[in-house]
Each structure stands twice: as C-alpha cells, then as structure tokens.
Amino acid sequence: MTGLRKFGGRTWIVTAAALIVLLVVNTVLQKNFLEPSVVQSNLTTFLPLVLVAIGQTYVILGGDIDLSVGAIVALVNVVTVSVIAALGGDGTAVALGLLVGMAVGAGCGLLNGLIIAGLRFQPIVTTFATSIVFSGLALWVLPQAGMSVPEPYWRTYAGDILGLPTVYAIYVVAFLIAAFLAARPFMTRLKAAGGLRTAAYQTGLRLGALRVSAFVLSGLFAAFASLCLTGETASGDPLMGQSLAMTAISAVVLGGTALSGGVGGTLGSVLGAWVVGMIGSVIFFAGLPFEYQTLVQGLIILAALAGGVLVTRR
Amino acid sequence: MNRFVEIAKNPLVISGAAILALLIIGELVSPGFARGDQVVRLLTVSAILGIAAAGQNLVILGGREGIDLSIGAVISLGAVIAGNVMSGSDAAIPLAFAAACCAGFLIGVVNGLGVTYLRIPPLVMTLGMMGVIQGGLVVLSRGVPSGNAAPALMAFVNRSAFLGIPGILFVWAALVVLMALMLKRTRFGWSIYAVGSNENAAVLTGLPARRIRVLLYGLAGLCGGFTGVCVIGYTGNSFISVGDQYVLPSIIAVVIGGTSLAGGSGSYTGTALGAIALVLLQSVLTTLNLEFWGRQVIFGVTLLLLMLLYGRQARLRV
Image 1: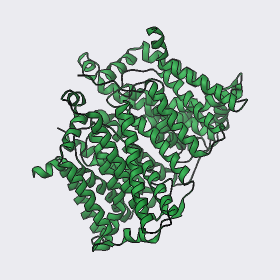
Image 2: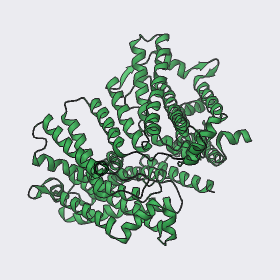
Image 3: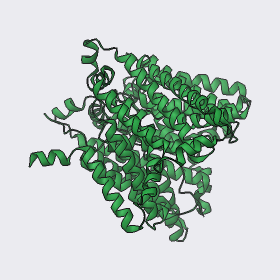
C-alpha cells in the first residue's frame, strides 16, 4: 500500500471510483464495450492524452504549468514525418525519425524549463509565448497537412510487438517510466520544490535543475504522445494536438494533483485522462441529440472537477 | 542614476516606449502605417481587447492565482446573444448590451462562487466554465451562425462619432479613467489590492474577501459580455468561437501592462497600454512581408523579450 501511495497519494481513489462508475454506465449503454477489440480501440484513442497528462503532472507537481504541450505535439509530428520522408522512408529512416522527434520534444521542454526556472519567468505566459513559437516552427517545417508516413510505421502501431498489441506495450513502457520516477528521490524533491518553494530552497535543493527536469519530462511525454498520434493518423499535420494542453490539465486536476504544486502523482493523472475520455464515450453512446453533447460533456467535467476538489479537501 | 533606472523600469514607460518604437518601425516598413486614420483603426482593435483585459485585470489583481480563461467563451456568448437580440434593429441595441452584460455577469458570479466557496483553483474553474459555455453555444445556435449587428452599433465601433474617432474609443477612454479612479480612489479599489496582496490580513481587518472576489469575477464576466457586443459591432455577425482569440492576449496585455500575476499590484492604465502595444506588434508583423510562420515566431520571441524586461518573479532568498 505504501508503494501505491508513493505512486500517487490517496486522492486517486476518488478518480478510480468515478472511472468505475463510467465503465459500468458505458457497459450498459454499449453492448460490445468489453470486447477486446473495442477495449483496444478505446485505449488507443485515450493514449495520447494519457501520455501528455503524465508529463504535465511533473510540471504541475513542481509548481509550474506547461501550456505549450499541444504545440510541441504538432512540432514533433511534422519534424518526425519530414525526417522520415527525407531519409527515404525505410526502417533506419523511421528509427532516426522517432529519435529526432523525441529529441525535439526534449529540446522544447528544456527551453521552457531554462527560461522559466533560469530567468524566473512566469510559467503560464512563458509557455503560451513558446507555444506560439513552436507552432510557428511547425508551420515552417510543414506548411500544410499532408506527407504520409511509410506503411510499416502505422502498421506496427496498429499491430503487435512480441505478441502484445503495440498500444498496450506503450502503456506498459509509460507506466514503467512513471513508476521508476515515482520511486526515485527525484519525485519527493520535485514535490518539495512545488509545495513550499522557499523552504525547499533553504534546505539546499537544486530547484532549478528539478524544475528544468520536469519541463524536459513534459516535452518528452508530449513527443511520445505525438509519435503515437502520428501512428494513428499516419500523416503530418502542423495543427495537430491543439486542444491537448487544456484537456491534459483537466485530466491532471481530476486525478487529484493540486495546481498549486507539491501534491499528487502520475497514477491519478492516468485515471483522470481515462475519465475524461470515458465521459466523451458515455455521452456518445447515451444517444443525446448531437448539439447537446458538448454542453453535457462540459457540465460533467466541471462537476467532476468541483467534486474532486471537494472530496479531497482537507 | 537610481532614479533613472526606476523610471526606465516602470511598466507604463516600457509599454509606452514599445508603442512608440512599434509605430516608428511600422512607419519605416510601410509608409502611412502611423497615419491618423490607421492609428484610429488600430486603437479600435485595441479597445476591444482592452475592454476584455479590464475584466481579466480585475480577477488577476484580486489574487489567489486569479485568472479567467472563460472570458473568450463569454465574449462569444455575448456576441451571439447580442446578435440574436438585435437582429439588425437599432432600437434593440440597449437591450442587446443589457442582455449580454447580464449573461456575462451571471457566469462570472458562478465562476467566483466556485473559486471562493468551493475553493476550486481559478484556472480549473474557468477552464471548466469555458467548456460549459462552448457547449451551451452549440445548443443555442445549433451550429449555425445566427443574428447580426444593428447598423448603429457597427457605426459606433467602425465609424467616426467626433473628429474621426469612433464612439467605442470614447467609451474605452472613459473606462480607463473610471478604472483608475475606482482602483486608486475608492474603498472598493483599495480593498481589491488588500485582498490581492495579503488575503489573511485583509480578512483580519474586516474586509469581506469572498464577496469582493465573487464580485470581481462577476465584473470580469460583465466586461466579457460587453466585449462580445463590441465584437459583433466590429465584424457585423458572429460565430460561436469568435471570442476564443481574446483569451490569452487579454492575459498578456495585463502582464505587459505591469500587473503581477500573483495579484495585488498593477494598474489598468498599464493594461490599456499593454493592449495597444500587443495590437501594434501584431499589426507591424502583418505589414512586414513575412510568411505566417515567421510572424508567429517573431511574435512569440517578442513576448518573451518583453517579459525579460519586467515580467520576472522575485529571486528566492535564504
């Protein structure tokens, strides 16, 4: 139990309960909901949000916020697609493309972190400004949507690796990374940096390094999400992922991580991302008139956010 | 020397200097940029952003990480309501303003209640509210653009009322004066700074901090609704995401204007200058014969450079 607590505090229990309710409702509404193919397709749809939410969690735990993840997703997508195309589209090209994509994500995160922690800029405004720069660069790399990725890329993403569906393998890898980081002193220090920044500084923690690492992680997970989205769409799109930043913040908060920093964990954010995805699915299958769907979704998310804050309040 | 540094670091001086520099650059790049009617045109665009930023400024001044991300959706709502109330008739303009402002105020009050009494972080509360309003707009309009501006409203925003200056600029100028008087010369204004800089101390001196904050969010919504009516006056008709483009610029105008995002310090005069500087910057970048991506990159980098001047946070000390 202590291990679980380290992974995400206790607030995730509320989110898990909400998720279970949604799952039950969806099973009633959609007869084939539990069939393996439907489960896999749902989890595939939720995967990019889950990954972005995990990355965002580190930044928020450290007391900052990253509004630029959507733009990073777009930039990584167009860079990866262009690199693969430029290198001829064979296996090596794909591997190099993926590497360059991850490097771009890490680089964007590093830039955010250095500006915010190093120059003491305000995170909301800064990551908004850098997101404008990143989207601009994405449009420079690829002015219009198009340019497809080679078949092996999306075929592998939709297929299996070592007998396990690739999407599940990616979930496993992401969870392992999150669990590994959760067990390191890094996580405790990051929470200290976000919780009581002055006190953390006075105990001699290297706040700058911690916050920069959190932004790099956020950039890396955004890149990871972008590569998955690319596997799904199989093409380049400089406007990809625009709404991801805001949705991921909702997911992180739903998962019990405090926006003020210092409290929460990645497990909650994963559950929160699934809850956000499941709300959309339940509303779709509830057979509401189309024009009411966005409204009901907005109301449920707002109620869930308010409810979560109320339940976990000390 | 210290006095000089102090003046040079004043946000009003910096945004004023930025405005002058941008006007000169604009005039050099494309002669006629700083001509009277052009400037009036740019000021009109700034006025629309500036009125929205007034609301944003109030919630940010009120502290506790105050911010209103729903202001864009409220602007859209105001525009759609006003368009449907007016549907081209001059007689219905006062009713359109009243309806849009009331709707905005009510939404703002709900935001404020969520933030104060349920203690939901403002960023999250207003983000959730944004989703709700956007959904509501889809229901209201059924996805089809509807309603249009009355001719007199379009004239108010776009045509000269006196000496070549449209009515909206007089309204904005009045708002700048009103806000300055309210913030610096009234009990309510002082209590905003008190609550924003140290809430506990404010409560201990007997200020109703919660009610003040609810009212601030209500006023922000009201500004959003009013902006919505101006937007439909500017463009003639509305669509349900017309206000989205104002959300982050309204925050940036406040920051460029020298109001601290931590709350409790700043002025609306600065925000108004910030709004003008922001609109000028976008306009200069448009006149530069650059591709869209280049403009975006320069815009983002300029924002970062502006923040380098004074948008920085205090150094931590042992």
